[in-house]
Image (tube, rainbow, N blue to C red; front, side):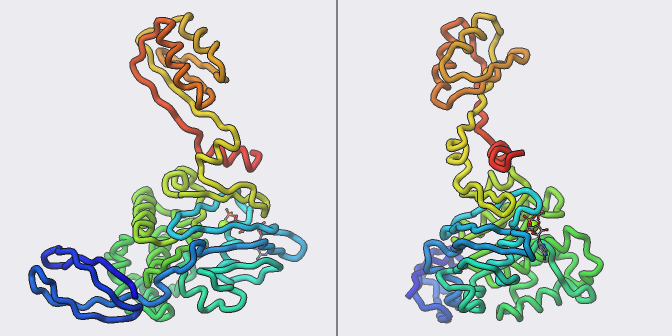
Length: 350
Ligand SMILES: Nc1ncnc2c1ncn2[C@@H]1O[C@H](COP(=O)(O)OP(=O)(O)OP(=O)(O)O)[C@@H](O)[C@H]1O
Ligand SMILES: [Mg+2]
């Protein structure tokens, strides 16, 4: 039995209802007497596992070339896990393996606890997938293509139009996909991945080919899916996007998973240091020399009335005290934590 809190569409009154997956129940709002029907989503809309994606010792070779080399990781329920790596590192290959789109040489993959090797059909029911290269029927319209996906997913066709609208394709429903731009195809691909509200999303470069508005739209959608409890595994080359939306990241390089953790923990492990910029009313030699003497300060740069300081996170307060003690009058202090770009460049050795 599942408990669900819903809002009456008429008076916005909040109700708690109970039912089993697939149940259709009649509802009468106790506040305004509006009548309605609520359908509890099917079983595959719910995840029972705390790690809905589990990859253990996965290896994939193309002839003698090892594209993915014995990698293991798990994506936790409800988190956004970003998959990073240089071109050709093995991201798409890993995602295709998770979706059983390629044969693998060794390893185990489970989706919501179900082995994709033993029961791929059941396992993949939980997943919405946006491939790196999306193939549509060029001579069908956007809506017809989506109906095709809805049929495959056994989802009501009524979901298609609202999803296309949400992805900014409301004005192109009846346009043949062969005439779509790359960004429009990407938006259609995202709509197809979202059909049936899958509890797991695997998105291979969801922002690829999109204009800034499209990138923001995808980011918003991913956050919205997370707030509904969806587990998201995504690859991207836009490091700011990953840093902004992901709870954890895995970094793959030449087929090897070289790091996995939250950005802040990775920065800590790699001993990356924050940069503090102190804006002063006036710069003096005394202040600069005082900052340089603080233990844990690695680098000091003077730019106009600003001092940029790279230092140990623990030394930040000592630096500020030293500035003030040396007679500096502080106007503003900004701290820039290590970026994902720094983590990425360090672990991929570039
Ligand atoms: N079908 C294939 N046959 C032979 N080699 C392949 C095949 N598919 C992928 N590879 C190789 O496997 C390696 C990993 O490719 P993959 O597409 O997984 O990289 P990626 O991390 O997704 O890169 P990108 O960021 O460019 O999308 C590459 O060296 C690629 O050339
Ligand atoms: Mg790829």
